[in-house]
Length: 356
Image (cartoon, rainbow, N blue to C red; front, top):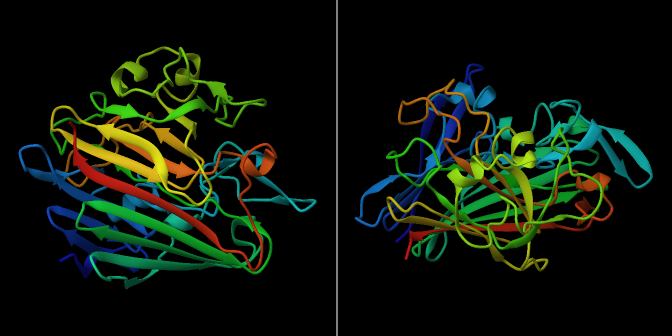
């Protein structure tokens, strides 16, 4: 029977206590923090039954406010980038918090990832879960409307971790929430994800400019590029491809793929990550139209992971299900607008298993 327990992860320099919630179902355990409503740990077995950590997280809580920001956190109000830190909404152009080269990244300088979320158990039936909730006041980082956000993690006996997001507002605004966990399925055997294989069911991806904002025009075909992940591809080959888009992103992926099977409100395949050495396999499904893949191109070993070793470049890969980057400035992209009386809903599923 799945279980949920609470303990204390420690205290932040400002004195805040950080709660740690553990979900357990069969051989899979998941650890969550109320700081950032974060996915801090996911332990699952390899083909030999050896259980090990697959989520890359910082050893010290304080690093979540520095070099390890966003690790495993719920990011918002708008995940990814909004160009020029300007939000066009209903005829107005609203200034937002600029925190990356004049743009707004993952909600601004004081995003949802740095907040202490309220938490309560959400167990029921054959699932163990935790519901996190946060109130973001009108004007928070420049975003209009008082937003009430909820993120529920639940773990089932089948080894599936479901993340459900909901939000409501009292004034028109934009919402785009995602989880920013970094995965390394080697369980400590390999420091980087170079030997991992990634598959993404997408025929197009979003080309970016040097600021990592989408270029004008239609999405680019993946055919004949390092972004063709329609069949499983070793990440190491992509990271050394020498493609201009790869170089622009710091020597790896930091791009959005346009998911082929997307139907609003329906959970559909988004990615499959595998590690041939251990046999571990992670399947990602989502209701979102896109997925941002980031391969830790800028990690520099400046902080230790939970295993005590410095987290190196390419030490993990993020699979961020999302609306498209800079969507508010692109009428041709799926809308992230939320109006009073409506409910924002998004679901992402991570299934732990073994490679064939």
